[in-house]
Length: 113
Image (cartoon, rainbow, N blue to C red; front, side, top):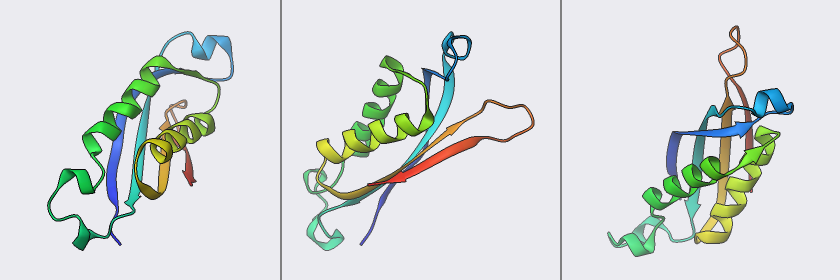
């Protein structure tokens, strides 16, 4: 079974536990792996038989743009639940990366549902 992968979709959102941290938008990178319910040989080169990754990308960007969050765990859960509800999939994995420290490449949270 194949998976559709969107690697490091960039978006800005208000995120953090303190009011100061949430006062300005921060960049997040969101990676998504989606396993469609249809097997590859059943897709027949038709977009309607698979997952429109352009639409998934825009869903992620819109959620980040319009939201305010305390935790990257919450961001990952909201994205995963949105994708699971909206698209015909078996499962989805979402990884959210945040860049809060100068001496650390990133912090991340990964969730599969």
